[in-house]
Amino acid sequence: MAISPDDGSAIDLHNPALAALLAWCVPGLGHLYQGRTLKGRLFMGAILGTFLLGMWLGGGRVVYASWKPGDTRWPFVCQAGAGVVALPALVQSMWLQGSAKQPLFAWEFMSPPLSPGQFVSRAYAERLTSTDPDIEADFFFDKPPLRQFRSDQVSLWHRRLGRWFEIGTLYTMLAGMLNVLVIYDAWAGPMGGVDGKAGTGEDRTKKLNA
Image 1 (tube, one colour):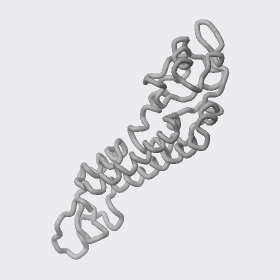
Image 2 (cartoon, rainbow, N blue to C red; image 1 turned 45 degrees about the vertical axis):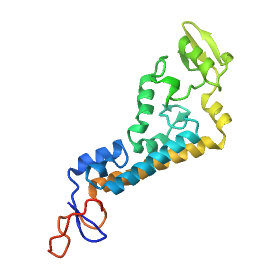
Image 3 (cartoon, one colour; image 1 turned 90 degrees about the vertical axis):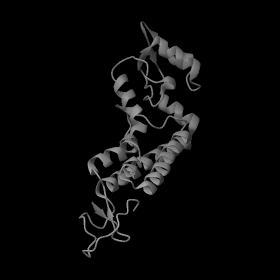
């Protein structure tokens, strides 16, 4: 139980650990689980809306996980706070680590960018040159049975998107960082008290939407 700082009413947090996990998975879901529907809907709309707006502004390229030398993607640490909406980036990064495999998802969704000298499969190179407007056929050199990328895909993204790449990155980072506060609120309840009493000894009506 927690205490509302507004009127001292009791708030049933149910299982706080589960609520915090749900709040990380989908912003606001932990609050919906606790019956705090007004907050849950507000957080879900605001945080997911901010994250998706950032993705749109950044041309769908700003959320990816990469720990390669020269392209350590520290913003993803913040973006991951938004929950499962950022999880495909981690899956893509782990799948492609140290290999010439094609990304798991269509259109290279949340896959890390190609770096200079990186080897890829011939099928993946052909798909990129036919579907990605940033990549030309002469960016690849034959290294049978693979092909080697001789450009820098991050630079290509920056050239095409300009400042919107950074703005989109910022929006998605803010969404993840704000959700950390939402997770804490689902776990501990509002600031102002964590015992099951309102401070007067009187019975109070449970207010789940506080």
